[in-house]
Picture 1 (tube, rainbow, N blue to C red):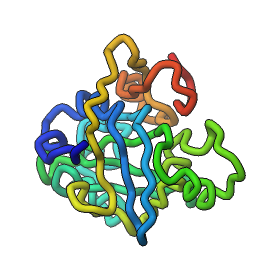
Picture 2: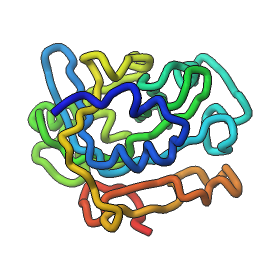
Picture 3: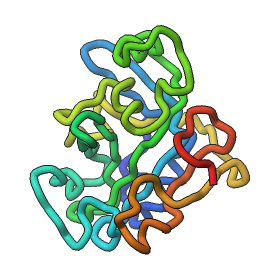
Length: 201
């Protein structure tokens, strides 16, 4: 098993990257506590040209500055004042493309995830939806800007490939205000996986 390389993230097609992240393993290592899960749901955000993106039309603020960082950077934003959402920056520096990690299937450190989320037992809600992913993995806004080739947040490839017929494709969730762009088929998920959030169509 090896870390996903910079060349994987540093490509122009964020939609392809979002699809190819399915099956890979996201890992966090904070204060000696390691937690991980297999990525089963993602969404692509095509930077400046995507009305659903935080950086649409070149918008640049303190909140979204890390979207303009080099490929392989973690971009964390807070939704509804509480949910810490993990995104992976792709493409060249200054091109603010990113992939939202919407759901993972928990693997390592489930006991730690349960403690972080206040749950007693493992169920499908633990890492279902991007807010739960962030909470279970111990991710907070101050982790935004971390480089995924370092050792705190990273993605591993164990050569598990999700076949095309097992991948669902749909519009993204919760971006209705983006007009036509809300209908873009930029969400990818593993069919039949219980941790997948939202609709399956």
